[in-house]
Amino acid sequence: MTKAIFQTESSGFESGPIEELRSNHPEVTFKLFEPIAGPVQHVATVEVDRLVEFVSSAKDTGFAMFVDLCGVDYLRRDPRFEVVITLLSIDPPERLRIEVPVPAAAPVLPSISGIFAGANFYERETFDLFGIEFSDHPDLTRILLPDDWEGHPLRKDYSVGSVPVQFKEAYKTT
Image (cartoon, rainbow, N blue to C red; front, side, top):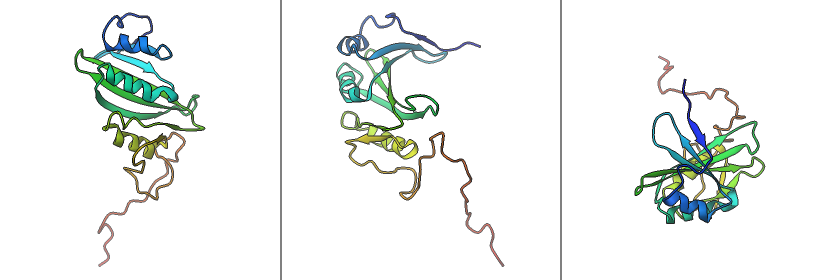
C-alpha cells in the first residue's frame, strides 16, 4: 500500500505565489503534500491571530478562488480543533491548504468572509456542527440544525444516542 508524502524542504517552492507567501510570512510553516492521486498541495499552518492577514496576502498573491472551509476535531490532541481552508490559484494552477489550529478552551477565530464572501456559509456550517466561532462574521447562526438544538454533533465527544424520527402515517389507526 502506498501513502501520501509530505515534504518540508524547499523543493516545490522555487517560484510563483507560494514563494511570495513564504517570503512575506516567515512565521508560517509550509509543507508540500503529494497525495497518491490528485494535484500536489501546498500546506500552510497559520496561527489564529495571523489568519486574516495571511488569507488576504494569499488572495493578493494569486490565490483568488476560495474552494472550501471545514472543521476537524482531534479529541485527544492539543489543540483539539483545526480549521482547514482551501484556496486555488488559476494561473499558475496551484492549490493552497491552510491549516489553523484552534484550542478547545477558546474555539474562536476571525472570519474570512470579508475577504472571500463564499466562506460565509462554510463558517456557519463549522459553527453549527463543531461549535467553532468566527468573530466578525456577519450572521453567525445555525445553518443546518434547528435554532433550539443543543450541542454540536460533529464533535467527537457528542453523544451518538438515537433521535426519534416520526414518519407521517406510519402508525395510522383505523
